[in-house]
Every structure is written in C-alpha cells, then in structure tokens.
Amino acid sequence: MKKITLFIICMLLLCTCFPALCFAEGVETAVVKALEVPVCVGYAYNCNELPIIGEFSEGDQYITVRTPDGAEGLADERWLSILRLSKVAIVRNERVEVFSELLRQGDEVEVISRGPAVTKVMVNGVEGEIESRFLRFEGEEEFVPEIRYTASGTELSNNPWLRDPKGKIVTGIYGNVYSIPNAVSVLKNKEVTVLEPLGECCLVEIDGEVGYIASKFALEAPTN
Picture 1: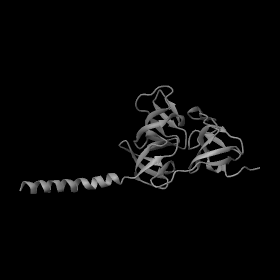
Picture 2: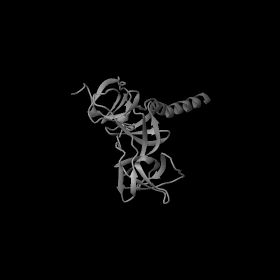
Picture 3: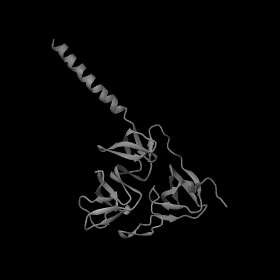
Picture 4: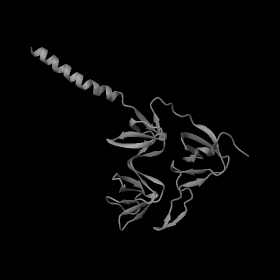
C-alpha cells in the first residue's frame, strides 16, 4: 500500500513539474545587436514634464523620472532640460525612452512576444520593450560585415536614433537648451564596414571609429 501511495505521489509531482520544464526549455531568446539598447518600460514625448524621483547630481547622464502615465525608470539627460530647483525634467525630443536598464551588444533577453517594430522582453525579472531591429532572434544567421561607401552628407552618430546631429542651440520658453553634439561629418565615398544593419540606420566602423549612419548613406559603390 505504501509503495502504491508513493508511486501516485511521484506521478503527481512529475505531471506538475513536466509542463513547467517543457516551457522553460521552449523559451525563445534573442541577442542584442546594437552597441547598447534600453529596456523600455515607458515613453515620454516632446514638452512632457517629468517629475525627477530619487537623488541626482550635476553631471549624471541618467536620471530617474516618472512619465505622465506613471511609469518609473531612467531617462537620458541629453534629451531633457533639467529644472533642478523644481526637480522636473522637460522632454526636448520627439520621444525619449524611460528604461529599467541598458543592455550591451551580445546580451541575451527572454522574448515574451515578437512584433514587427517592438518586441516585449523579460530582463532580470522586469518586463519591457526593445525595438525589434536591435535584436537577433533564434534561427537568424549572424550578419557578415560588408564594405560600403558613404554618400554626400553622411554623419557618424553615437546613437541609433541619429538624434541632435548638429548640436544646435534651441531657444524656447524654457530658455536656451544646448544639445550635445554627437555626430561627426564623414567625407563622401569614404569606405566603411557595415557591422550590423539596423533598419533605418546601420552600425558601422570608419577608420577605427564605431557608430551609426543612416542606411540610405551606405552605398554599394562610390559615386561621382
């Protein structure tokens, strides 16, 4: 009788655990292709006023903010105007990401659901979003680097959104806002190595410098 009871208990445990084990083995993963990408938990838009939560100091690149819909996370100070006395950040780009953490090239994420533009992921127990173009999914072959040539007007940027390329001064109701220059001009017909195609931009290496250029400026052959 004891053997039968023990057998039944073992079978119940096996039936309970087996689906979970199968699910764990079947989880889809993806690898980050860009130099770094945010795990977005929310977004903020031009002129949104974001309360700054937590401590911050002069020179911090990332500050913790709360979006109008209540999402809390880090935001890049380069895309914000900081009103330090009132602890408010004003968005000065079309859209900025509020994120739980930054991932580096080669980091692996768990895929919850894949979309054409955005993929939902789980990273360190936090659910967020990453642009699908920044991920290499299971079954996709690694890109083999290719030689291309720059078109006229090419600029090498340090971010895949190609933001604030000119470092212009913007005058508005919040005073003078100084954009940080983050792009350098590249000569026409310059040979570049495309490391990863990322949709509207591509990750490239030019004379030892790695960054992003708009894909339309990466030509198959030099032009006159």
